[in-house]
Image (cartoon, rainbow, N blue to C red; front, top):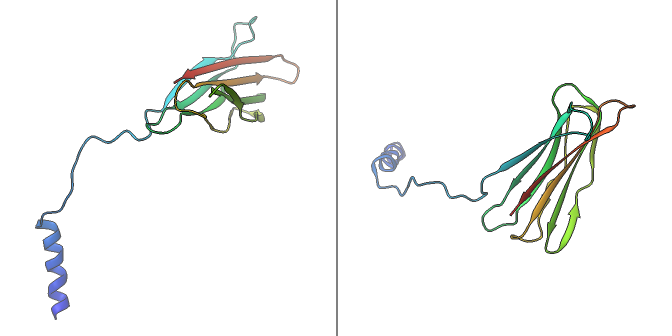
Length: 144
């Protein structure tokens, strides 16, 4: 009998009692995620097969990060590639090329900078529409 009385009493005390809770502006832990976009081209033709996108952020209290995505405007490419490059602490690091065949997009691995300041990221994007066509390139960039 006591248990049946205690449970509603506890629920009521939680509902009406003084519970510590607050509503404040969210603390920016990750920092805003940004994207830099560039159209692919070969320097000669006006038509572009796709675009490169660099997704990047500079989290508060942590090191900046980025990854590259290459995607077609429509359809698929014979071969599509993406890679991320970072220059930080006087050194240059790369991810491996992410490569897909007969695909509409590909995303590289995420690269984390060695330092929190003076960091430059580059997204390297390559597109080959057909097996006999040339390559189109795009480069995206972000600095912190």
